Image 1 (cartoon, helix red, strand yellow):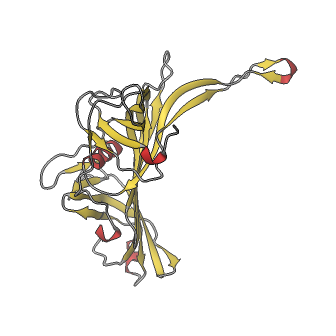
Image 2 (image 1 turned 60 degrees about the vertical axis):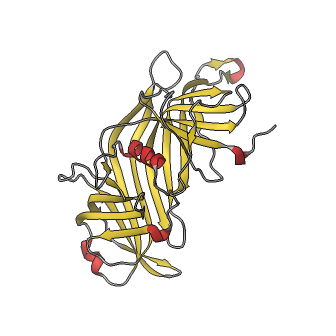
Image 3 (image 1 turned 30 degrees about the vertical axis):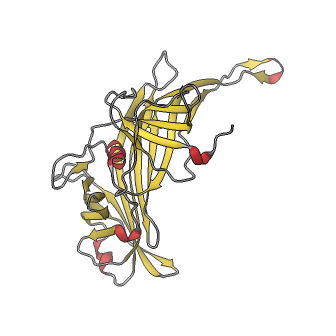
Length: 306
């Protein structure tokens, strides 16, 4: 029987050894949207420049393989979101009142289990993509709509199985409800503005490391620097915010509620020159911030659990 897209199931398991799927631990449901495709296994092509008779040549050879996944979900709190955020920012949630994580250098990996077809042992179709790491995380929130999150995920090893992973899936708890536009609150340098949309993004330059003697990528490395941006659009009511252009300030927003949300703070955010935009509902001012290193917090990004 053909596979029904409505039956695809996804889950994640935090790894203790990078690239190795754990046999113990917590397997967390990934509550994807209805149009979410499975992770894609890509293979690099190595061109063959050999020239053959009659202007022919040889076909390209297959090089290193890796997994790529653009994951899009409704925004919510919970253990799965914690796992993905930690991987994206290379930080770890710790402490009390508040529990927080910040952009750092502690990389973490996880395995994505994609159940394409459920069934008894020998009759199921399952991908296990190990050694996965989030290289980007973004949040979008627009008035009248639900908030969405996106993660760009990179992985190293894939195993094709005909039986499901032995760990039982921990379902998303009922209290981890999706975040709506009404669950978003923004704080910018004491400004009192009416915001219509928010776009937050943070990413690290990551790629797979390839070594001699094996076809799959060995692991994932990070280079360059973390880039964190926040774009806010507010209704234009005065020129007060224009005076903040090129200034560095702390900017934060909360999304969700206590026990089911986060506070995102960019402690040293530089505001680019505000620009006007026209919307059917009114004249907007677009505020674009970019994170800089903050000497007090020793980072450019702090995430707190509500």
